[in-house]
Length: 175
Image 1 (cartoon, helix red, strand yellow):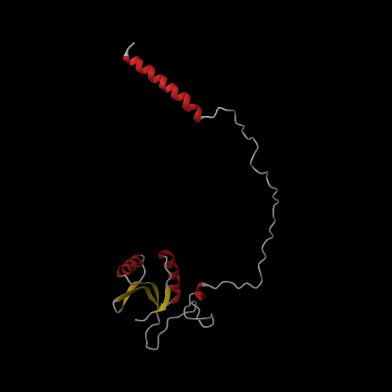
Image 2: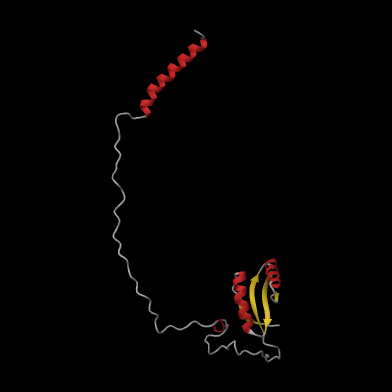
């Protein structure tokens, strides 16, 4: 017999001996296990349909205000404000036209104000920036307008608020 054949036989015997020792340790051949065939799902509950009555509108509900009434700044009640339907351009005591602007944003960073101004101008709005210096700080405010009719600016307000995600403020224009 050759040397290679002897090594193969000895190796095979060692593997068989290890298998005889390790396999019974890893697996339990003591008996069969029972499988629980009982269900763990609870029985279906008895659900009765619920009928919901139709809602009844109360009589004392006040209807919502129109945009013209909502967007009048500086007034506490509808009696103090003026209707936007019959609004006519007027002159101030100084002889200047009474005009209104929308303040779109107020920024400490000039670049943000210029970017917003550029976007507003590209969208066709009459826009401008006013800068105010407070010591070392510089405050840039972006405005749309001016216009002598509030009604026109109220319509632009809703469009600008939606498009740019801001809450514009209607203020009186001061040249």
